[in-house]
Image (cartoon, rainbow, N blue to C red; front, side):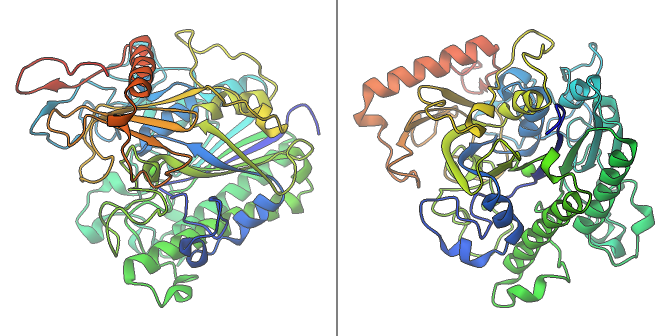
Length: 484
Ligand code: CA
């Protein structure tokens, strides 16, 4: 393999840990039986599967962390972005939310309420990569420079802008939101050539991505493909290619399963293309999702159960909101059909991808990076995450209620996870779970593990102080909510 491998970052939106026929738990589950993802299986057979990969619980924080190497507490894009200078937090009876970076990333140092950072594709471009964004961006608010991936280091932008979801997956609807009374902010941009073509959005993005792969090879440049699907985010739609495979499921679930299968076909088509071009042995493929599967609303069946055995889903600090399916294939480095149970975090992708590209010790604006390279894990090293703490910070309100959903900060260290709830009326101020023994987070051990709670609180508190993290204000007292 040459010194500069091609890198495909295949990022799925809102895909849960169980939304696949490839088991990520110690045993197959009914969901593994339901979903059909043969190309994820194919990638897993030829690479390494990570069973404890984590992201943030909603879109923008994860995406900004991936592309900057910073934890959400530090970059302050703690909730999802949309309109300029406007927070999308739901109202809370108890909390006033902080002035988080509602505008996302800014390429200029004078951006207001936005994080100014040097982005992953900028580093890659500096060393000769052709940098391609395809699909959902959701990195900066409308009417700000960060809305356009081309302002963040991408040479090519296909279909990416400020919105975090498609108006529609259907070409007959122009990929816009008219059909549901939505405005043109939701229209997936730049795909006019496919309107009324009968081509499903996931397929459109795949065709366009493969064209860019071809162009990169023709130009003789290493490429970084940020293949960032709108699937499997709402609004669900019937993918006619796959919907008939799920006739026994309720309507929403059938559409969802077909979306998952369409996403998987995209992965297969890209793997096929790099095989055909003879570049598979020079191409790293990374599979990841940006947050847990939607479960609090918009699904058939009982809420908070769609990621079982995990508790809850998107928007939650419980495992269902943050644990993701991750696979990496690096020819000549990863061992085929292997599994890694060490935990990794979304900001780790930044340093890891740069290391893959030969960039060691990247210098981020501000001089700090939170991500840690998982390349040693790809080489088969173990014990790397022992004693390491992972952190989540969400001083915001997503909308729905449910287990782990709310304004929270959390820490995972070894077997244990501690969640701190910011609302004064929370049923428990702290939840402590032994994730290794209780993956479903059914038993809160905070009351009987006082020493452990104290130690984790201290470590979480010190991290938040180090980040200068923002906390909400308690409406009753007018005071900032105390650090954990
Ligand atoms: Ca998402």
